[in-house]
Length: 204
Image (spheres, helix red, strand yellow):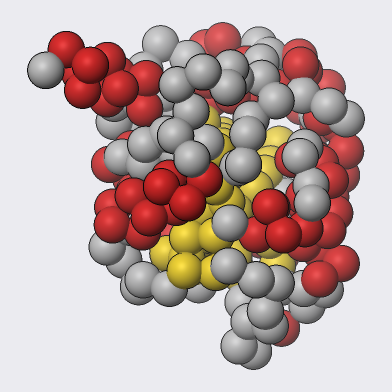
């Protein structure tokens, strides 16, 4: 499992389909692995980058472990050689997802990126800075979370881009689609969350 700490070239980028899974990873857990594995299988990806955010603008600083610690823990959890743990946002100097995706597409113009996210994030995506720009930058794959599937389909982002949604049986083509294009997988994933893990740790 490689750790990407600088904006280096990826091998044969013209042939690479890369899923981008962003988050605080505070801490990384099996749910992140499950999304990554499902994305690689359903979207026919060559790999997934875990983009460990220096600080999520929508989350409090209190309780956030240092970036280096979160990267190290994510590297321990990610036991698949196709997963790359990355602290690249800190080096790019980007804070918001829209800016990070633009910077990555400029840095790796021949890579075919797909933004990966849980349905819980799609529900509140309209709160993100320049959120619609994300859909226009790279294709998006959304993965169901328990209790969020119906709400995700009714989310502002889902309604705004409803005409660009692919049926899940065409998901293998998503990385080759021109943005905007997105897909929603409805099968519920692992309900485990980083918040639950932190609460369990504090309760010990």
